[in-house]
Length: 448
Image (cartoon, rainbow, N blue to C red):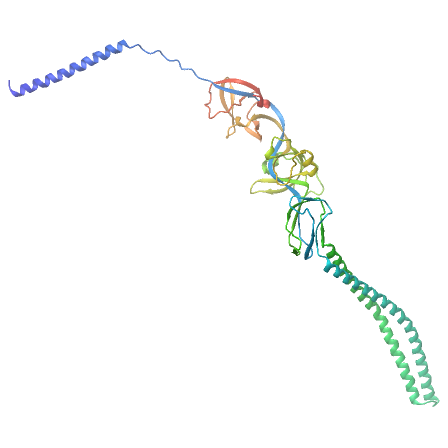
């Protein structure tokens, strides 16, 4: 046997051994598989979603619009001196937060210069009054003198004519006598003309004096006013907001030294969505004769006010007063709610509503007709609700009329009697199996 044959025999033996091992393995696997029992078939059951539902009920609901704003006094007055001078007196309680009663003296300025100016103006008025009296007396005297001078002029004229006639016709007398008589007549006529001119000037001089006395009286009035301005009193029950003055301080006009707040009437400015305001704000229906292009027919409806730091307390009661502004950029309508000091204190004896509080305001509006009340989370962000129909989940698209607190009001898309799922669900599958655990009318969903 040659070398080639020996090699071929070795290869054949190896292949045979490999095939034998494989056959033994396959045989063993078949035998083991016959010993294993087949598993039982599993039954797949659909697990239902446990939900609470509300049954759709139509109702009419008055709308309440909610807004927020800060309480401010209606009137805040900045006090500046009207005259300059040194402060010589200050109210003993002139500090921020103090309340000064109406009519009390706040501060006073040294009045000596202004009293002297008033005395001077008073003397000037008296002087011009005496001047007018003197002019009237002189006018009366000169009128009498005019009568005498008129008679003297006539006598001088007659004497001159007589002497002139005797000298020219009868050659009696002298030329110098005639000329002397003429001079006497001319002098009398000149005096008459002078006094006549003086009498004609008296009305003008009197009017000038009357104008002067009017100026003097104006100066006197200003001097009295300046003297009165040396003392500053409150014109209402004032709360001191700011006080920047000291005894001995020199103050000038337009220098703000006090700021007073009138807390008898408070206001809260609230911004509302202009589209919501258009739909729900209440306006008078009657037409006024003097209508303006503004919201002047707004109804003064009663409003509820809560301080945001004490929302659980009973509300204060105010009134919707007016529309302040419309802003197209922010699409808001700003309204003012007023509350009197009596309302702000009488309703809460221990802690009143005061300026500076940030408040929540509820404003009643029109009535929504035939709407279905649902919890806010029952409506998705894309305005869908889930209903239970034959124990299966179904999605419906709805139209919302209004959102109010935790309530949303559906106007279209749901029919009365349909069962709407009130349980919070996150992306449920349509046609999912449901198990209803509790049911209530939609207008009583909070009882679930």
